[in-house]
Structure formats: structure tokens, C-alpha cells
Image (cartoon, rainbow, N blue to C red; front, side):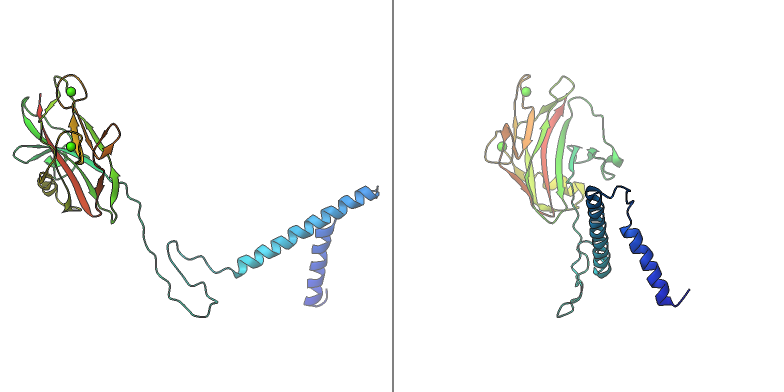
Amino acid sequence: MGSGAEKKRVVLDKFFKLLLSDDIPKDQSEDNLSVITERRRKRIIAFALTLMLAALAWTLPALAAFNEATDPGGGGISLTDSGQVEVVGTGLQLVKQVWDTSNTCLASSPADAGCNGGATSTSVPAGTTLNFLIYVDNSTGLQATDVRIQDAIDESATGFTYVDGSLTWNNNATATGAAILTIYTDSAANGLLDPVDADIASSVDTGAPAGRDNITIGAVTGQANAQLNIPGSFVFGLRFQMVKQ
Ligand SMILES: [Ca+2]
Ligand SMILES: [Ca+2]
């Protein structure tokens, strides 16, 4: 075998023969020859596309990390990369707790280690008056808009009797991450009226037995109060009282 250039020429010759080879039929009619020509045309186009893609991949800069602005190079000035900015989509948790009238947390759902050792249920003597707390900690930096909450009261013989006029709330004083005792205490700061009116919550009697049995907060369809918006980095809290049957 000859020089390196000669070896390259032989390899390239073999390659192009392979690229252009056809099973040429004995019948070299005009139809068959046009089929062969078409095959060759398609192979050459595919080969050219492959070369273009390979060249493109070769010249593209390495991809930057996600959520980061970078200078790909080649401009008139060099820029310092931004570094990554982190954006986390957070689902806000609804929490319901029951407290006694001495302001001790008896049970929480979801469980909270600071509430009765993480209890999610409790037993009390029939006739006990209890304070219920519903809260949402908006730990994000943005307002949570048009928040809607519903709480149906069990009016059965083993259920509860709602204490009329006991709705209270707070929405813009308790900082995110506050202790539950703070949330509970702050949630008694502002009074609300039971009827559906201009405030953000209501408790109405939807049917027998007599007594208010459905609490809604915000613009809930069918029992729509004022729209509730929870400011970013604040806790919304609402309290009401019921007597255990
Ligand atoms: Ca109301
Ligand atoms: Ca009722």
C-alpha cells in the first residue's frame, strides 16, 4: 500500500461506491434506471443532511444550566453569566385544628408536632365548647388570589352545634412560619358576621336540623363572600366555636 494520502483516497472511493451502489437489475429499461437515479438522489440528500447536522452539533456551544442567562460567546463584548435563579411551584396547605377554650391545641390535620404531640384526633366530654382554627400559611413571595374554603358542620346527634357569631379572622399580621399559638391567637383579632355579606366568610343554615351548618370562606359558588386574597409571606387564619354533642 502507498502513502497516507493514497490510503485515504482508497477509503473514500470505497465509501462513495457504497453510497452510490445499487442492485442494478438486468432489465435496464428506462423505468428501472429512473428508479436507481431517484434512490441515489435520496441517498445523497440524506448524506448531506447528516453532514450538516454533524457540523451544527460541532459548532453549538455547550448548553447552559436551566434558569441561567449566559453569554454564548462570539459577540462584541463578554458578559458574566447570571448564575441560576430558582423558581419553585408551591401548593399551599390548608390546616384545620381544634383547641380547647383554655387555648391548648388538641388535634391538628395535617399533624403538627407542636399540637398535642402530633395528635390528629381527640376525645372530649359531650357538651364541651371547642375553638376551631382553619389556616393557610402563604409561605410564597406572591399573593394567593381568590382563595376559597368550605367547612361543612356535622349536625348529627354525635356532631356539633355551631356557636352563632363566633367567626373571627386575620390575614395580614401573622408572618409566615409563625408558631401555631400565634396563628391561633391572631385569628381572633377581627370579627365576622355569619350571613353572606361584604366580609370574607359566612356560616349559614342549609337545612334541618335547625342551626348553621355550612361555613364558606371567600367567593365560594353558592355561598359567595368577598374574595379572599392572602398576601405573600403572611398567614390567613379563621376561627369559630362549636359545642360537641
Ligand atoms: Ca359574613
Ligand atoms: Ca342546619
